[in-house]
Structures are given as C-alpha cells and as structure tokens.
Length: 132
Image 1 (spheres, one colour):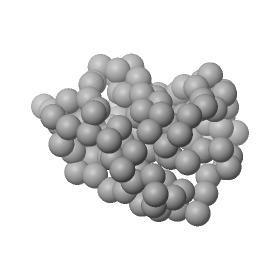
Image 2 (cartoon, rainbow, N blue to C red):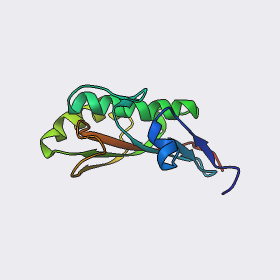
Image 3 (cartoon, rainbow, N blue to C red):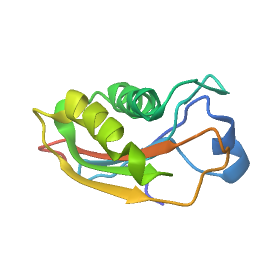
C-alpha cells in the first residue's frame, strides 16, 4: 500500500480485533468512512432509530473532522436498518444532517448487526476537492 493513503483509527475496539480503519483517505481526495453505529467510547448509546442514526452519523462526521473535512464534503451515504418501519426516523436524521448537502444516498434493510440492540449502521464517503 502506498504511503499517500491516510488511515484514521478511533477508539472502537472492533477496529483492532477485525483489522480495519475508521476512515481511509485516498490520494485522489476520496475519503471512505467505515460503518458507524451508535457505539461511542466502547458503549452502545441508548435510543431508537432516529437517535441511533444521529449518533452513528456523528461518529462518521467526527472522523471526517479529524481529517479536516466536514458535512459539506460528503458525497455519498449508506444507511443500513434492521426494520423497514424505521425508514422515516432514519431519513429524518439524514435530512437534518445532510439536507443542504444532498449526497447520493442508499437505505438498505438488513437482517441484523453484531449486537441486537443496534438498529442502524451508516457509511459515509466524502471528497476533498483539489487533491491528487
């Protein structure tokens, strides 16, 4: 792997156990943020789908901030939900955070996550213009 690829770690215990980075910035300026849940400081935050989505996106946005980027740099989001009934709550959280940015977005229903109390996981991609 090239030295010009930046890798960002966080406090998530699964990163070390499973061998991944919270975020990776490519030389082209594309930043890929790994799946984020409402796990903060190793603890799963309580709350329903809306609250979990806000927290999960907050984890992703914090990773972007560490790389000098913000919500305005987000070009794609993916939202994974365990129940179709939660689409409106998660969509509302997405709109509050990205309504002015309007990234490409996907919302996908999945069978579950590593902890059954998690109902939302998100991924974010951002672009640093002028890089590369």
